[in-house]
Length: 292
Ligand code: SF4
Image (cartoon, rainbow, N blue to C red):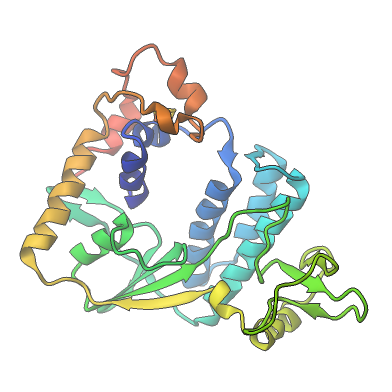
């Protein structure tokens, strides 16, 4: 079990047992990117060959994903390009870390996704923009009682108009001069519709030039943010986190009603609604959530 399963439980209590049992028939593309980002971070931090962006494209070409509106080929390339760029930024940090041990709550071991450690510091690599301390990876990280938690955040906007417009992926070409820009500077108005969007993968720009463009257009904060958190030393607060995590872990294998308001955006809808009743819990799921 890992921190993602606790987050899934808060979306719908039926979801983590389904996720532990099997992959959904089709994964939403953003979920697939998150999984490959986690794999890629591990590859970078442990000095292994970084295959996550190409693995992602291979998945897109074989199992396929659920896409928002737009051309699937273009979106898969855009997301893979984002993944490639984000992992290059992780490489730039120059860290060599080991995976953090699981958090322990009432005897249950819960892996903290994308958590790595060096002596007294715990590093979390998360997709998102804000250091939201109510998220489970950050809550569980505090149970390890590190001196500091370093948060490495990688914003991933939603695709719009069939493209993933981030400065890791898309540049804007000036209609007259043909010059390329990655972002507007403060005081400038946005790019008008006359600027054309160009994917980094479409014209095979070298990463070195693109990285220079990120500095030139001062848009690194749209790509990467860093925050330091000093974990709580309040025993009551830490006990509360431990008890809540243990209670969720114990509840995951139990039957739960369907939370119908979330079903329309749930990738497990076909499986979940095909079940006769809610009392079925896969044996694999049960054994996974009771590991001590
Ligand atoms: S389909 Fe609905 S009830 Fe089933 S796991 Fe998803 S959100 Fe929950």
